[in-house]
Image 1 (cartoon, rainbow, N blue to C red):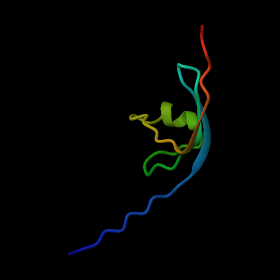
Image 2 (cartoon, one colour; image 1 turned 45 degrees about the vertical axis):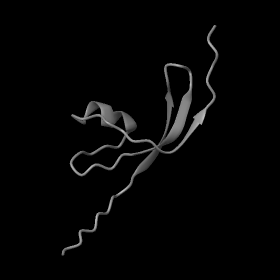
Image 3 (tube, helix red, strand yellow; image 1 turned 90 degrees about the vertical axis):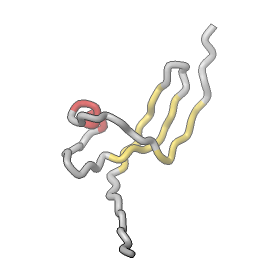
Length: 67
């Protein structure tokens, strides 16, 4: 039986994401990608053919009340 060790390189960057209901999610995303050179958060959405992110170390701030 062989054992495969998976290591992930991290280049975390802080982000704030405002949702449609007014809530704000603050956390980090990883900019490291094996095939792409990403130096900015926007590069994930403009240079990556699959612009999917995972937010980690995340917190969610209160929702605004719309009336």
